[in-house]
Image 1 (spheres, rainbow, N blue to C red):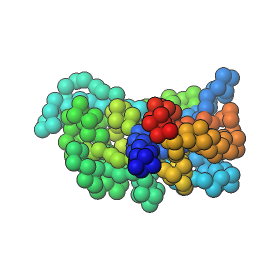
Image 2: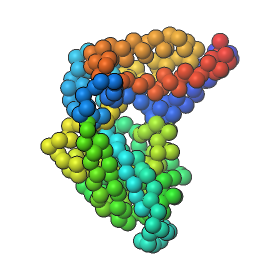
Image 3: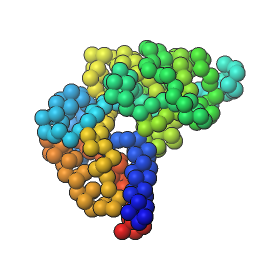
Length: 270
C-alpha cells in the first residue's frame, strides 16, 4: 500500500510539472552579456544549433523552434460588434511551425471550457488564433479581423509592423505552452507569417527559442530521488551547453525548475 501510494504521488507530481512546464524539458535562448556586439540579436539561426544537438546527444526527442514577439491590439466594445473602445492591450505573439509540431504531435489546441480537441492544424498567412482568456478581455469573435501592431528588436534595429489578421479560432491548449503563458495575452500565428511580415531574407530560419523534450519522457523525473533527477537532467543539458556555447546561449530547464519546488512532496514519500 505504501509503495502504491508513493508511486501514485510521484506520478501525480510528474503530471503536474509536465503541465506547468508545457511538456518542455529544456529551452534554448540567446544569452546576453556585458560587452556583447551591439547587433547581437535574440533571434538566432536555429539549424546550426539543431545540428550541434544531433551531433552531441541522443537524449532528445523533439526539437522545436518558435518565435515570440510583442504586440498591441485594439479592444472591441463587445463580441457582437466591430466597434472599438479606443483602448489597447499588449499581447504576446507566438509564431509556431504548425507542420513540424503537428508531425511531432506536440501539444494540442482544445475548445475553451470543455477540453475537447479543436481542429486547428494550421493558420494561413494573415490569420491568427487567440487564447480564450485574453479574448475575454479584448472581445473578438471567430472570423473577425483584428489589427495587430507587432514589434521586435533584432540586434540594434527596432522593427514595427501593423497588419490586419483574420481570427480563425478562439482556443485553450494542453501541453502546447507552459501554464504561465495563460497570463501572457497569447495570440498565435504561423511562423512563416512572421517571416513574411518582417522579411524572409533576414528572418527565415530564425527563432527566439528552441524547445527540447527528452526521449525518456516522464520516467526521467523521480520525485523520490530529487538529487538524482537534478544531476541527470543537468548532465544532459551541460553537454549541449558546452557544445553550443556557455557564453552565447542559455538553457532553461522548466520541469526541473518546477521539481525544485517539490521538496515538501518528497517528505510524503520517503
